[in-house]
Image (cartoon, rainbow, N blue to C red):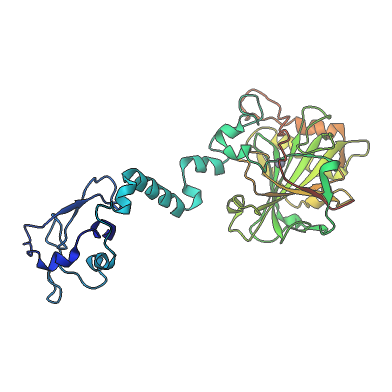
Amino acid sequence: MHAYTSHLNLKTIPTLPVPSAGHPCFSTFPSPRRRGRRWQPFTLSGHSRHGPGPAPSPAFPRGQREPGGRCEAARLSPPPAPGAVPALARRGRAWIWRESIKSRRETRPPSCQSRRHRTMINPNYYPWGYDSDNGPDQWHKNYPFAKGRHQSPIEINNKEVHYDSSLLPWFASYDPGSAKTILNNGKTCRVVFDDSFDRSVLRGGPLPQVYRLRQLHFHWGSSDDHGSEHVVNGVRYAGELHLLHWNPKYSNYLDARRRTDGIAALAIFLQVGETPKPEMKRILEEINAIKTKGKMVPFPNFDPSILFPKSHDYWTYHGSFTTPPCEECVTWIILREPIIVSSDQMAKLRSLSKNAENEPDHPLVDNWRPTQPRYFRMVSASFL
Ligand SMILES: [Zn+2]
């Protein structure tokens, strides 16, 4: 406030007549503190037109202030040159308004910055899917992360991958008792695990610490020649299995999704071949029980590491969820060796429906997102 008063010769204040309670002396200056009020009544005597103000102190009668008070600070600041306009007044009210908005934004926690931001972190705020009207090309309209520079999936090209000899092997220690349910959410088939403590974890590889298993799910196509999300040297596999883990240094899964190092995703390709993996049987035999959207059944005693291929060689890069809101919080670990599935097993996945039980039947197929630009990201390989 003293910026407005500093051009006054305050040494004359003690000689001013002491105003009575009903007759305050006013000085009008624009106030940066109060919005919606064009002129702030300011009295040199310490009381406003709304009341008489504090009782006068015998040591400092009206018209004077205690040392360090507002008037004292003004008294100590150097007087400006004759005719100079105080700095804040020169900036104008528009500048003050902008600055106050900016400071309010900076002091708010990011989770409640705006309605727009809330939609970005809530995947159910706007409906989305894989059709032409709500598919991957449309997601960015409601979920702006989808146009980010660290999006997934990407195409992995041997020429652009660099071997990183410092990459460690990764390890998974999964407790079969942590498996809880299997469900159809209309977009994929998902197995959910208990992640209330470090029960089933992934560690090593590019990860700085253990990550807790949260869920696994699949992506697949409408035929055997496509369906995976990541593409390797131009090859799109029939499907892709994702095991999602979160960093327990954050308070919960949703909090971890907002952090750069919040999620670790293990991706395993499904390739149609002659010697299918029998371990897929356990999941596929539950498909009939979760045929339509919203169905969920218990799925106890399941260790997903039985689905791993023999080789643990991997590519790794930093990317995003491949479904809205597409948060860029994922350390991807993509296994080089696919697991083999049969054409019948893939057909079983395609027998799921994306509609609810009482709605017309729509097969749940092609729930994969096309590859996204890699921009300047590096893809590292744990193998030569
Ligand atoms: Zn996925």
